[in-house]
Length: 189
Image 1 (cartoon, rainbow, N blue to C red):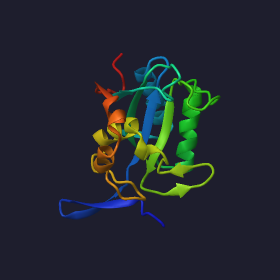
Image 2: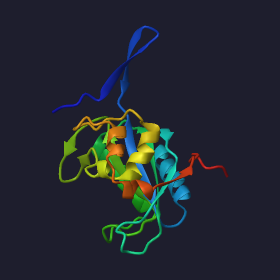
Image 3: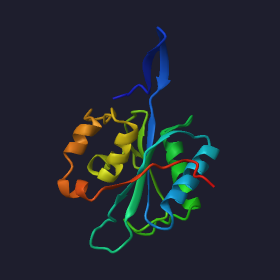
Image 4: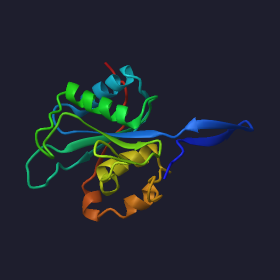
């Protein structure tokens, strides 16, 4: 199924074609997450991404729960990028590596984690890339920040809107989420 990556809006009586949004998730539980987010967004900006919107910061417990590790800080950003989804994913992985992310063990603590959530509503399933992100609909730490910047977002495959999805999360997951406040980019010096 092909998904057209453009939407049409009416502005002063004219039909204007606008690109569908791209959403990424940011997470970290080592070092200073806000500084890591700022550095990651700066790197993305230097490499052709336009940062359009950023959620506030959300705190969630580390995973898995039986392994002691610092809580995660999470956020989401809406960006624009002229390239393809695979090239953006490559840029996200390059940015993670430049900021100290090592992919040694699954669910290991990390100074930065960048996930491509939605690329203009496209649906891609290859060994290298899966969008929309396959586990995002079960993760409050993704959905709460995303709902701040995209309150009308709908899953490209299921068409379920984000608020309905949030209402279906287990109360035990929702109760552990803590809103920490606005994230300002770039961070004041």
